[in-house]
Amino acid sequence: MKGHQAWAMLGIVVLLGVLLGVQFRINRGTPAVGPENVGEMAVLLLHSESQDQRLAQEVATLKAQLLAREQGVTRYKELVQQLNQAREQAGLTKVSGKGVTVLMTEPASGPGGSGIFSIHDTDVLMILNELRAAGAYALSINGQRVVATTEVRQAGSIFSINNGPAAPPFTIIALGNPTTLRQALTLRGGVVDTLQAVGIGVKIKISDQLDVPAYQGADLP
Image 1 (cartoon, rainbow, N blue to C red):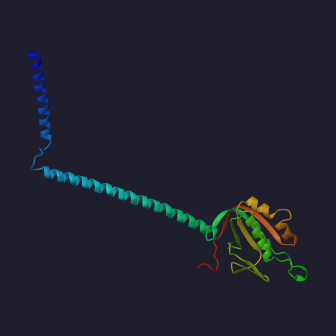
Image 2 (image 1 turned 90 degrees about the horizontal axis):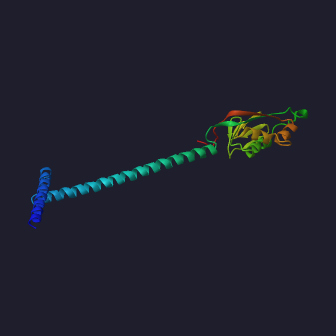
Image 3 (image 1 turned 45 degrees about the horizontal axis):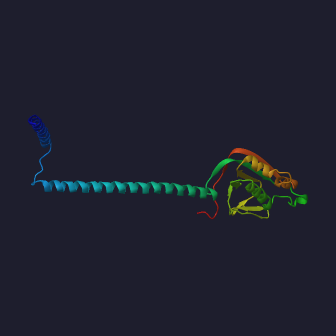
């Protein structure tokens, strides 16, 4: 028993020595905390926690601002796109693309120069309506953009397009699928056959690149 007690005592002494050595090393690297600086350490700890909370709040605020700005930019781009689409649909922008050019020419005057077989506004409207029905998305007549409010009117031999004077021959440009547009006009017994039957000249030309100008009506500022 005495041998065992001796070994136990030796183990305790060794353990105490190790603990003292560790404590000595810690004390060398860390200032001792005593009653005189406990308050100071508490203040520093509270200040650190407060600063951490403030920084976290700033980060959250900046993230929210960044998200709002990104959403604002996205919404702005959507509005610009919608505005451009609306302007294009209203005919307020120049448009280019594939399509057809339709040339309408006056026939020779009827017997006695009566002009019975001359081009009428209804003839022009027949061409326009057929092109629209065939999918034309932009139209012009003699350089005047045709929009929803465009009127083609006739007073004697004088035409009015977008409240401006016009006269034959008429050059109509239509943007869309060229083959479809031409086929719509040249159906047997269709609009071209009807006009040519009374002597009105109608020539159709397909093009890969045509320009339709923006609407410049009198009602625009």
